[in-house]
Length: 55
Image 1 (cartoon, rainbow, N blue to C red):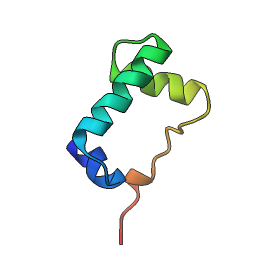
Image 2: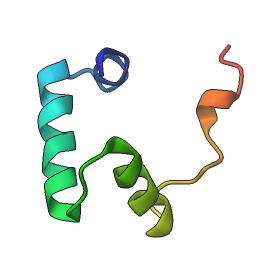
Image 3: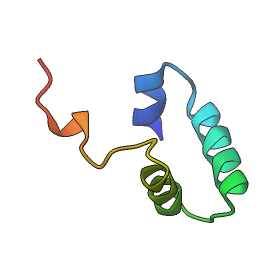
């Protein structure tokens, strides 16, 4: 969560709180299930910018 927090310029606690909220709203109990729901909803693509070299 530290990496996500750094990328978003927020604290790790904020990331944890937001993740917990999303899991509750989606009725899931894992980060994997949140990602799956986001992909199925079209909010997130499996093609990631993270796989591209940064320059």
